[in-house]
Image (cartoon, rainbow, N blue to C red; front, side, top):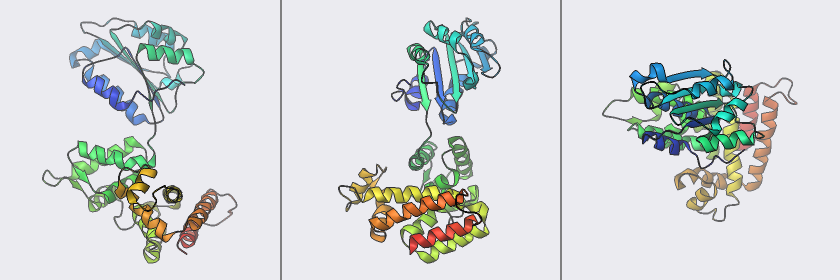
Length: 342
């Protein structure tokens, strides 16, 4: 697969917002959010409303073939500067030969947007990739890592002229996860609930709007574990046992594994006694984010951390039914928390 790392969502949007349109946009990848944002922007801004009836065509890869797409792209605009051809579900195209031929000589008055979700171009189609890059833009929309979600949330909220505290950020990240379309939808719901005078998102606002308890959630459970607060950790586990919809072992295992994996890495930091040094080593967005790892190194030895990681793997396997004929998830959770804290 050809390099796409220099083509970012921000660079594409900056160019589009300046009024520059390329003949071809091939948008692919596992994260549909950025694909939809770019496609929607082009659909809404490349043409005037009165120009769209005759100059905007939307096609679906499951309903058309590459020849039909190429034919549509070769048409000239009617009483407009350009025409826009949008191909959705392009991952369903069986053969791309005719499209590849068009890409070698694209019509400059056409903006062809190809949306290929849940995957990317077969790496063996080098000529196809090369033709796309020479004709326009090849963009890969990648899933955000869990550790990048807080920064995404903070930036999104800031763009909407609001603020959010770190706890609220983590509550939302833990509750919604890395599905950006759903995450943005929930953030918009929270933002709409804010008044004009007070644009702060607090844990209480998150609890009221998203339904995540500000006292019993993954953030508080992790905090209790990091600080070795046995009473609070058991309190939270019992709450989840009685309220399974509020949280489960399946959502907490990745969170805890990520923390202890990073804690193990923190022990190898060249400046592990410095919060700034640990933050830099773990590539955290700020020294503040390293606070929990400094606490973790005080409360868990490197050997205990290794044992916890091993236990997390064991419980993960058991939660999926491996070597576990009948132990329910809530009992596995209790077993894990006891092991970590004792």
